[in-house]
Amino acid sequence: METYGYPHFDIHRADLHRVLYEEASSLGVDIRLNASVANIDIPKTTVRLDSGEIFAGSVIIGADGQKSKCREILLGRPDPLLQSGDLGFRIVLRAADMRERPELRSLLEPPNINAWFGPHSHVVSYLLQKDDLFNVFLGGPEDKADLGTIGPQRATIEELEARFAGWDPRLKSLLELAQETRKWTMFRGSDILTWSSPQKNFTLLGDAAHGMLPYLGQGAAQSFEDAVALSTLLSKCTHPSELRKAVVLYEQLRFPRAMEVRRRSHEVRATHGYPDGPLQEERDRLLNLPPFKEYPNVWADPVFQPWLWGYDAASEAGKLWDSCQSEDTRVADFALRVLRRLLSSAYSLLIQALRRL
Image 1 (cartoon, one colour):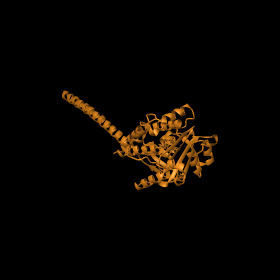
Image 2: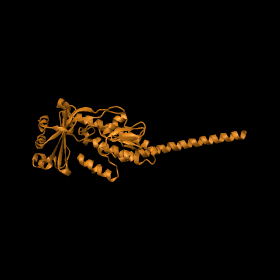
Image 3: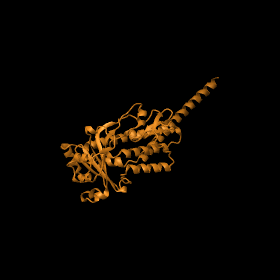
Image 4: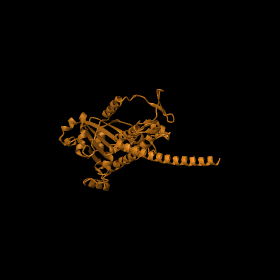
């Protein structure tokens, strides 16, 4: 709060969906459930549902997640997800049960994000205070039997105990409390050169544009930054002719930042999963030093943290629009001066020609 003016939130996906749904409904958004998109006609800016219903608008925003049909329509070809080679597990525990085990109380009080690093694997846990639940994510390499596990699918606690045998005894205690777990393959999207159609009436947002691995915890956050930036730019438009400009500026602003966050997420995956050896030993040595630029714990990096958490998407979008407006004004003023000179010269030539008659 003191540094950035806002707290760091960890929120259950269902609660986030509910908040977004309620706010959108209160603003009069027409939300259609169980409505699949059959096709998008980009030149006509229309969307046709499987039901045959057609919607027309000025701009189409494709925010349909990592397995995006909008992305394939934009590219004009199939675009299957790429396997990362990693598998994710999740367990959810009752915090009340954890408080009965003295060795686990430090994970709850004060509420914090806890992380464990190990060979090719890592674990992250945090408290969901509203429901008094404790979420644990465990990531590691896929086995051959798990390849292409589109999840989440059921897994066994015994599988997790085998994967993380010999780790922190507190992690063993967490697994002893678990009743069930689920697993899924972590996919990533392919790299694309643009998020928008040539006409700039169709653009992608969120995971449809830049799906990333979860190692920075930034998938949802970057989607919100996209939405804030695009809505800010669209709100600046005073005429339909400016919508194209808003889409151009949206991609100009968001593409490099989202791609950098995506790249850093891949780096974190490698750093946290060093096998035992020189790289792991050097990482652990550095973690015992005060944070510095390129610190192995990226969330404590004094340069990267403010870049990541101190970003104001609305402010940056507003400044970009205003700077372009100023540039547009300068160009228009210059063009007007040139036009006046041309008209003045043409008028002088006309007067001279008339005098000769």
